[in-house]
Image 1 (cartoon, rainbow, N blue to C red):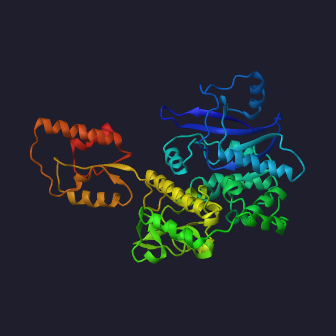
Image 2: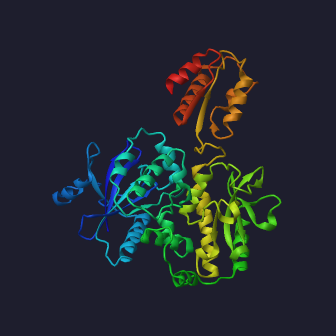
Image 3: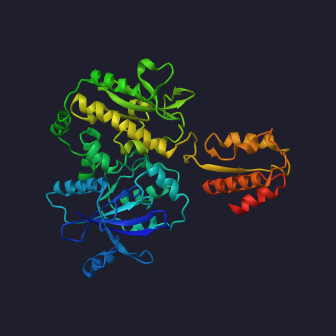
Length: 457
């Protein structure tokens, strides 16, 4: 498999736009299908010098995939695990028809910032002015079309693009998709072909795609064989060893010690249980207790958590466990023996915790990332609104970090400062301004200082 893509670097940050990616199998350039994903992952340049393709023969074939104003240099990239799973999916699709996959699979995305971490990508792309390529992409879909954007299909922004791709796929004859957008799972290929490959729902989803029907013919022998490939393990022993290790790493939820529930971050708890053949589960915390029904409650950052956890192989469908779980993953998916399962659970949970801690997900309902806020208000001009500043700062701190909390202090000293102290304050405040993601200024009281801070920002 060869990977070809357009790529445009954005500034000096290392970020870039990767779009119109194609996977080429064998010698043919015939388009053999399309897949729609969330966003480009971490696949990188094949050539060490990051040089664009200059082979006349390859460029002649690749320019067929260009059109109008959306022309750009082509590059060869390495593959990533998701691409490998896409390749396996379409290879099996054609094998089911007695054919070998020879040709090109097009990869389209709901947005095109190259970033393996979805939350980071969403945060970055919201700050960029990027051309909307969706309409162009929709026009170039080729049957068969697999939609694998998972929960991002319900994102308040990217859900619009998801529905455009959905409608186009239906028009091309994708009968395996339910006419009701909300009744489709849009399972990510990484989960379909790797993490959940032995699950009955994934087997049936594959055959729906292969047979292009909502009611595929799947032999019970195939399902039973997949289930039998999972070795039986000592569920209770795994739970005891796993919780013993977690007791040294995490704090238990108050009153839930016997149920082995741990505070995983500011918003969610982790449960390890030997019930239902053993699983690791996550739920939201509210006032130190758990959300118990995701159907009736609006959980903070719910779709972001589901999206991250689905990439780790967790089952994130809302219907799991009667809608009371954010995500679950069975012990048996971690390995085939007690030692491997226990080790893999601990390693994955610690990696996931570091991942979430790095992203700093916070408890708000607008699904945005914790930002550094520079709050500006009058200090030497007039302190009559100091209590207002304090209330505003406390409100902002519910979801973000305020670098200038001192602005809200009602007992701030207003004595004249020495020149040295003034220089220190200037250097400190301008450094905070450079670090901040946003400036919020309360300008009721006239202030030269606030005016300067706004001009500097």
